[in-house]
Length: 288
Image 1 (cartoon, rainbow, N blue to C red):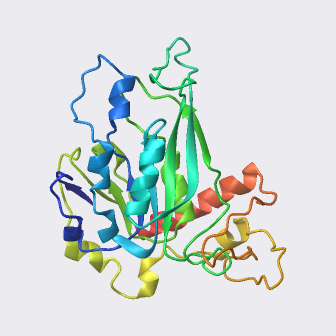
Image 2: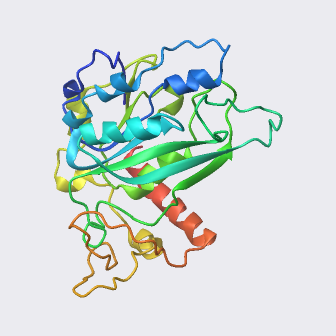
């Protein structure tokens, strides 16, 4: 579903739903600085304006947030937003931009930067308690990497790589997914897109909530034995008292919430492709 609205004025409470995943791709001032002299049909948002978004109103008790923050001041300001909205930063997804089709392109130099910026960051935040060792019904850890490498979009474009959706959908099995600052080009099955760049609306709060009204199982994508067999399991814990769970691993409990050890175990490209194929089949069945 999608909803055309001015996010400066729209009250997110009107969505009448709590979301498992919130994805925010704001039109940053940094994007216009990079393409000086280019005419834009949108007004950039300052980080003060972004922070005023009341994301905490629509975040479920256990949920994840993904926020594109550019490559400069947003690295600090984005973290402030996460804290204000009640999230703890747990990962930083990095988008490396190649320039094979435009090798002569000179990068924009930030006045106080030391290096040329050829990447962007998407901060990932967690709210509530989610354990890899026990919450395998809600998350699939270790499926994707924290790095995306794609060709740089045309000058002035704010387009993001489609791989970011793959990462979010593979990781979190919650079905309630909100995309703030969505556009007609980023509409995607299973997502509610909200923002001023959409050209029409079909959102109905009653209809949307009816998709999750039959029972707790409706809130989750679910799994199959094939997916469970293919997906990588969390590494075996090395601490006394570590126990396994639905997550298929024995990750150390650090503070009782989110543990981030570095072990991923052997998982080749063939297994990754098979997992993505089976996961795609499962996802498409839910949103036809």
